[in-house]
Image (cartoon, rainbow, N blue to C red; front, side, top):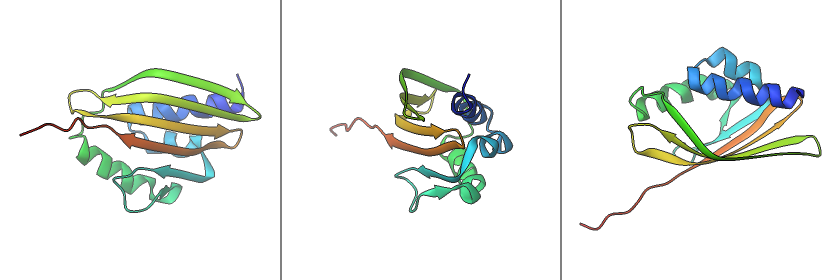
Length: 118
């Protein structure tokens, strides 16, 4: 298993477990988390505050469901695409995660909502 796969696996476990230390140990020094609900991209040093806001947004429900996962390891970059859902919240979307042998470099998420009439 390559270092980038190990970092990626530790990173997703960190989110499943809401374990800040595990997340930080999986991220590269120049890590960026880009969430359109945030006014600015989240850096490593901002991750703890972001996790608190995320838990408030998800009502502390941390049961994740990932589907339609696609992984490509090319030219030293592991790229993951997936559909994510926080079970029971209606919160869902897509994510792309870029990881190299220094750790997770970028996660960029999007949200999906179905507009309803009336």
